[in-house]
Length: 153
Image 1 (cartoon, rainbow, N blue to C red):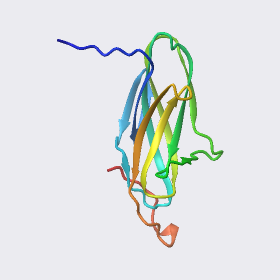
Image 2 (tube, rainbow, N blue to C red):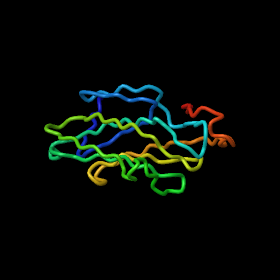
Image 3 (cartoon, helix red, strand yellow):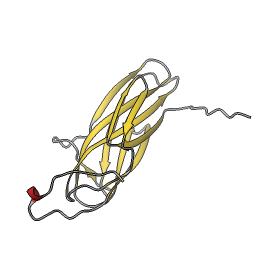
């Protein structure tokens, strides 16, 4: 017997990668993972790409706002734009469909540990949470002595 999944409201699924591109409801990703070992902690981590598939059903047509928010290991919001705002994007849904979205981020990391990257649609009507594990590496005494690179594990 074949089962059929029935979606009765918006659903969001997300993942992290080194790079994500998308068009026409399809995402292409390179380096999917949840653990990063940056060259320095504290420091800037990135680029980190967030890919999301958002499924919209009848009754949810129209404009929808997507937002990305990062929380540090302490649960506090991490500002990821120079203005301290969370990146947003608006999509106009004209028929029930799956929308592919991607966000490129540079994340300031103050400490190692598990960060949370949240994709929030319409102020919380639907949310996906992806962990980002930062493996700590001590910053060198001279910041110019090491290149700033990151590795997905």
